[in-house]
Image (tube, rainbow over all chains, first blue to last red; front, side):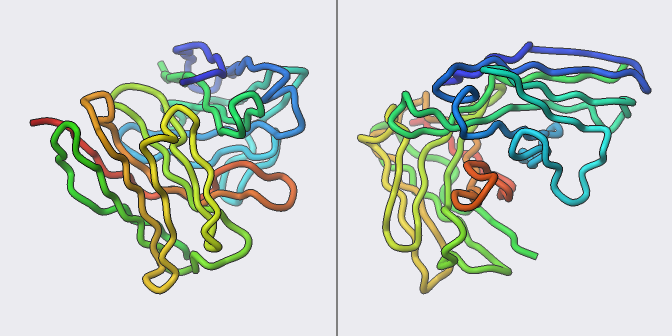
Amino acid sequence: QSVLTQPPSLSGAPGQNVTISCSGASSNIGADYGVHWYQQLTGSAPKLLIYGTKHRPSGVPDRFFGSKSGTSASLAITGLQEEDEADYFCQSYDTSLTGSYVFGTGTRVTVL
Amino acid sequence: QVQLQESGPGLVKPSETLSLTCTVSGGSVSSDTYYWSWIRQPPGKGLEWIGNAFHSGRTNYNPSLKSRVTISVDSSKNQFSLKLSSVTAADTAVYYCAREIRTGQPRWYFDLWGRGTLGTVSS
């Protein structure tokens, strides 16, 4: 049961910038539990892309940038590359569901 | 390098119990730093957190699945497991095991995932 809302799809040409939004509530993104992002290439498991709103794990290119404002978060991909074509999911922790992790609905990014 | 690998029967009959195991290599399930989670993804759909366990035996479950789920850690085998009872076709999904960061700052996220295993419910 996804309680974080993302656009179903976005696209851009190589080199362009795309921004994925993630809309939540005061009980998840708006609370001090952080928002995190995962990249899922076709046929693969999700991979941590951004944690704690803006931090990149080792090996993640700096063209991925996370931010948060109020009850929403965003993932920006600057200088889109072909290998960025994937599904992207945001994730947070929700206190209204008796302590349960929640994921976004997912956004498919297509590189034209 | 820590790796997670799911295993278990790929096909389960309706009303029976789906049982999966996640083997941790290159690290210890007894670490005080991590919880161990199960997450599933129905074909073509999004991600759903099922629940987690700590090596002490403490568990947390998704309220929507709580009545049917049991997750446990076996430190002697360096594994953790999932049991989902009374399954229906709606439980057909790829099941992922994942390492969960629940202490320190930032926290409340999954930093390492297994490759996933398809669990199909069908007669």
